[in-house]
Length: 264
Image (cartoon, rainbow, N blue to C red; front, side):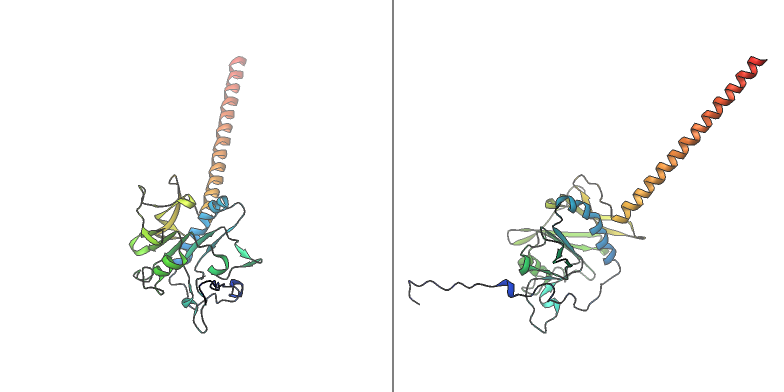
């Protein structure tokens, strides 16, 4: 090629790459422990009302133990060689369904929008979630390839969250605020540990708070709160009815006494 010739541009046609319907949505493994499912429900149902306000057009998706494909796996490679499956993640500004169907996985090269936050629930010693081995380790893949703005590692046995913020091209460990929470500013929320009972189990649960420090309630907690409010209102109404009846009875007694005195 002469110096006057321009090099041929390399164009990758992403339309030829597989989409979520053509890629495996499971690697055959099962949920690691019984806490993961209720923990995901707690995170999702408590934050949905906030996300519905942030996205009035409904353009966002939440993944729970779902695959994020960052590379096309070459057969017969399993899911894990081409994707990571975070326990929980949120992606803004993408449709919750594709062509009217639920997503089977999140395919980076089809949508190009990274998750805003990824959360992992530690079942072992946390080494997998902190693995920085180039091109293989989960931490390295999240930091260098998938690149969420925030990455949280939740260890229930230690009652703690280790949260990172992507600054330029590296994760930086975040500091807790005065409430012991991590500020997730794009969501206007805080992430932290709540010691309490959820679904009949007392644990240090990972939960959301609003910017004023108010705990966000899960769907079943909101229902329970509403039922208690109705019961309280009914109880107060019954007490008011009883007070009114007692007052009427006292008035009637006084009137009867006055009639007796006047007749005497």
